[in-house]
Length: 82
Image (cartoon, rainbow, N blue to C red):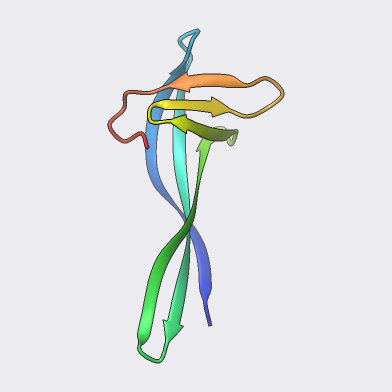
């Protein structure tokens, strides 16, 4: 039986043009695949959210966009930023 789970795998800071700081959390979905030979955990998908739960889309390395009624562009030079 395969088991799926999600883990927070990274966190980094980013800021908007007006200087507002945001904490961005990276969540990764994993699937554990078990066969007669044993079990293996593989990553499936990655999602970004603010610490308040807002969806974040990656634009490119160091650039992100909060998705909502009004889009907010963010930048980050944090070494943990994907």
